[in-house]
Image (cartoon, rainbow, N blue to C red):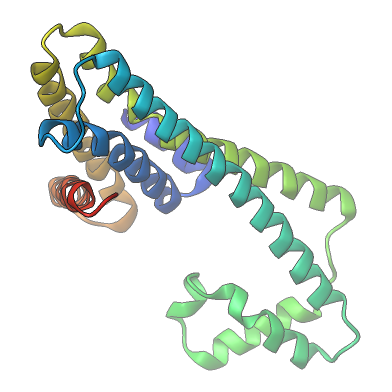
Length: 218
């Protein structure tokens, strides 16, 4: 699982990889939690598996399409701003917001303005390189889909291999939560937090969100 997370994170960034795996876990566990609490009536494990796969694959595909679409739109918008006839200072002001949630948020304001001005004054890359950028965006979007459906594996296998439905749901929940702990443990190295702390936090948050969503119509 650590290898899978690292592979996905290398193409999407660790934060987005974790986000999508959490989505996949929560969406799969919603049906199991609802069935265990009697909110939906499930008597056949196959029906439950179909619901889980349908949910994760559908929303994974939606994320894949929308991420790529929004990324390409953003690229076109930034190109329009950088190609405009206004001054470099005005361009810098226009693109400043595109650096939000980046390392530029952590530096003092004068340095941020200087970097924005430098970007606004720099020559643009070639059309061929831009096409390669869009291919990387597409690859990232596909790996977001993979991240979303990956949590199905530990959730679905017990349902297919264990005859007793309620035992299978318990085992699926336990293994899936353990998977999120392992993913959280590995994520800790990216943010400089001890593995057991980040693993416990991620697993607990995933479980609590699933529990809350189960009773609020998630």
